Image 1: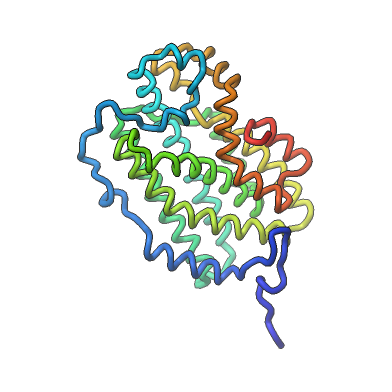
Image 2: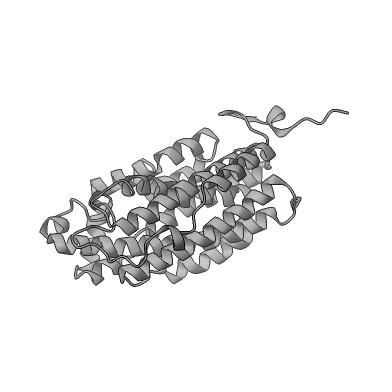
Length: 309
């Protein structure tokens, strides 16, 4: 009797799916060559550089708003320090969720498979990333910015009830938008050297995580029952709405001496900010559209999030 592999029988709008074990084998080989220990890779003892940003100004939430035009250069750079800390705090929260979802995903799978081995490798990566972000926040002398308590607790529900395709869709939401921003950050010599190093490590290692999640989400959207695919569309849309809401903690604005309500209102009204967020999400939304995730209520939730035109 001949055994047929996944890659020979599974197809979606993007073509044939690769064999799950083959994908994981390649990702494991890449991990062996291109993994980093941030504690050793980055110079944490070097002083921060005067006059440098913590995040490219064009990616800051208030860029090119009326408030921005009234701010001094020093205040703008202080905003970048706090927004970087807010994004780092969001990243830690998200990666802790992701690690738990990955553990759930592999719980019933063969422990010696490449697929499980790579999931464990990714969990190890995410542990290092979370510690790196925490150390970056401390080095910058910034406060942490937890997500609102409502969303913190909603995530408990997500971790309990999330479907497998829903887990991987949420993974891509958290990874791909920040990845787009970080690819603009690490080559930018206006930015603090430490921040450039942090984003470079994250970009290199997250590229593997994105590949793993995309391949698995494609497979799940082909093989999952109809109810699970529909639930994934809705949960992914709601996750997009929550993610966009939590992207920058409004406390940031108060901490740099701005009126919180006015700053939030100007961010919401900013055409530049909307363009930045949609550009950051476009590669992901195109992919989700191709594989049938952006439909019905889910699509409308994505549009309400501001991440999809």
